Length: 130
Picture 1 (cartoon, rainbow, N blue to C red):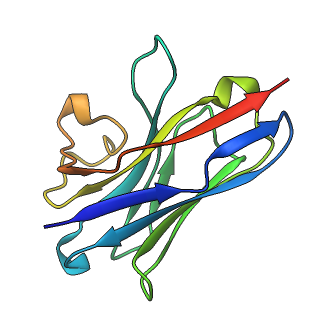
Picture 2 (spheres, rainbow, N blue to C red; picture 1 turned 120 degrees about the vertical axis):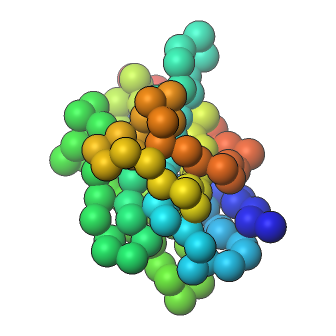
Picture 3 (cartoon, rainbow, N blue to C red; picture 1 turned 180 degrees about the vertical axis):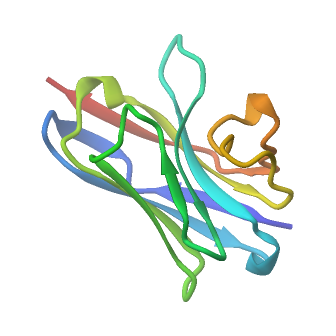
């Protein structure tokens, strides 16, 4: 069984930075891809960034490119999301997720299109004020 626990959320002013962490328990070798998603009130869930566990290959949503960095630390089984130059529109609950099965290449941020994430964290709130 895999469990994911996010931390690091909080309130920050626009232009500020935060680093989210996701502690991943269980057999890490079965993890294909790990990712961060977010959901703002009244909006659909949005893929933010993803990283392949074996290659460290990453992909980002256009809305966060150049501002957010996803990374992983295999020594302590932790997934990170470094967020800089934060904007009010980044306000959302952020979730980490793990995919053991993968899916179509290029669709890592789109579970609705067939990239399956079978483990999810409980979420951490990020609030950016103007």
